[in-house]
Image 1 (cartoon, rainbow, N blue to C red):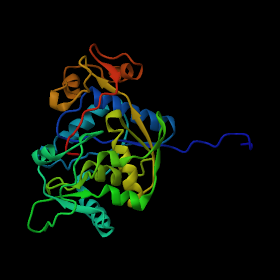
Image 2: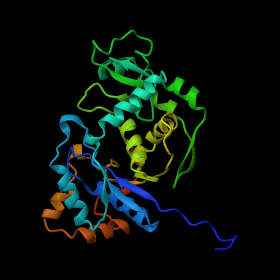
Image 3: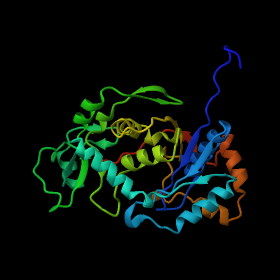
Length: 296
């Protein structure tokens, strides 16, 4: 290599991290295919991580269905530990943030938040800080733990992150308000924000490949990476597959599953190639539909 040659791109590690609370559909296939192809194009690794801490909604038997779905699509992966084995890690990180004075207990219900909220953010209504200065004994009450966003940003100062498609980004986690990091339900010990940030760091993920519906979450994850002294990856937020009504495919709307297609005898490898080349099934298109969770 001469001094004029560009430096070689390091291998990328990507991941596909489904939750076993319903079958995979074409939107999941699109995301998994993209994550695998980006990793392999860079000589890297494609990981499968089962995000199975969704309380009673998690169905352990679906993890094996997911593996058969991905194999049917012709994908190859390395599997890492599921989230259910990582709860001690989440607890330790939450304690680290408490020691910094950044978490506070919150007793508010969804209805109370909806009634008191005065502004909307990227994920819907923003928590108004009702419990931020309240006297609450978490040993006596069922509470969630929220991050004091203003105090956290005082510690970190301005932050930036990079999306492979959208470019350099100024982190603005304050738009989401004091998000929950530890949920009330101990069957679901960590929020998506905390668990996914820790998992990606621990698994060595260097290119976080996921849908545009999670773009705003990355502002929060960038903050947590600095607070917890974690490595900072590159993100790749891809367009979503959307239906004829402009809505992303979703388990809760009973999108047809990959397992149904597989069991009907459809050729999974041919389907994967169609998705790669933009030959989408009738009624589907690429978009960036985003749907809100008012209590995030």
